[in-house]
Amino acid sequence: GLEQDSVIHYASKALMLARKLGDSETEMGIYNPLGVAYCFASKYDTARILFDRAIEMAIERNDKKAETGTLSLVAFAYAKEGKYNTAVDYYLKIIKISEEESWTDDRVRALNNLSEMNRRMGNATIAMKYLEESEEICNNLLPSEIGTYYWRIPHIYNEYASNYIDQGN
Image 1 (cartoon, rainbow, N blue to C red):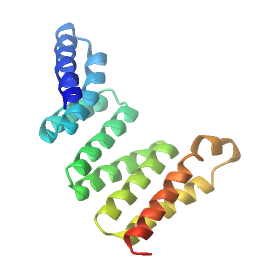
Image 2: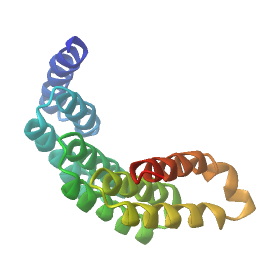
Image 3: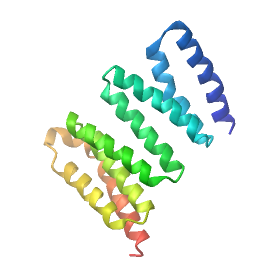
């Protein structure tokens, strides 16, 4: 729609200016929002080119947070396109990095997304396995961490409900 066209127009201009000025920080910050705009315009190939560049830049900087953030957007693009198996591959990459870096929140989010992708593919048993793992992580947090992650529990239960509904229960 009009919003995506506007974002694409102005973000593209900002990207060209950042490149011209050699401002790699701004350049890197534009790729993801621009890629998302292309996703919502159903221009997935263009979105993935932008996401790939953001991932390259994140790897060059050894910025794992930026890398996993963009991997999540790549997974989102594939899911939006209905390519759930490919989205699963990207969420698994996020889990691997999250486990290596001990990032509980990113891991829980990726597990919840894996559940949703499997539910959409009709793999209710696998979807439930990911939810159970996510719930277990949240339930075993230290008291000082609970406030940070406890808000994820309602999302987990919503996914449980969706799985049960999809199974006709």
